[in-house]
Image (cartoon, rainbow, N blue to C red):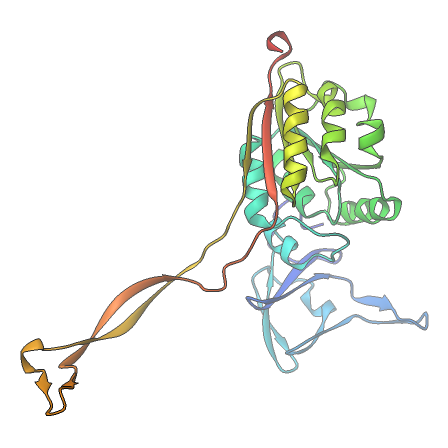
Length: 308
């Protein structure tokens, strides 16, 4: 239950992140034993590229501790939503931290906010929203897939987030959001194949003071139809953004320096270009492997009732 509040010491039932390298991390639930495929209870041993780890040995250690593996070592980290996004089991395509940060900022989510999310998917965004709205806010998450809803519910219970995140199976494009949350939402987030169907049904979920809405779509055709529907339903300040992460490498690089007065011309007319010296200069260059498109984020505001 490590996600619910910060603590220093690892206890049984906690979720931890085993950090091997920047590109190799694993989420582990601290359980001393598990049941194998033969129905037998055995010690919980987690296998990594650097060897095996007896999970029961983590109990009582502090988060951030360096732990020994059979062929190396690793760090055991506290599970933040950002680390969970990198290590969670994928049940659907997920939203990553650059887009999540933009969503939270543009939707103006803060402690005490009431947020509606559809669909739940693998719960990447749900964990980040839960952290933002604590201690007295709420996240109402919807998904049409029954099995995904059940898995997500169990996951939120194990992570200590069930008091903040409520998950429900519902086709919001046909039925809208649950009537019990009408007039309560500060923000609505849509990650749906046809978000324009849910936009008109979302209006009655907002508070009378209005709020913000966001739609995540991978295709521009989805964005166009969503923007048209937002306009027809009284939303204003409509804008579509795309988060493109671009990394720059700063390093020292050698450059040849020529003495132009000492360039010799050979009998055949060619010139002998011999560098007089090589100077080291600090340079900055964009990484050639720039991550590509993830999705378009369309944001809009619903004015207060008296201004619609």
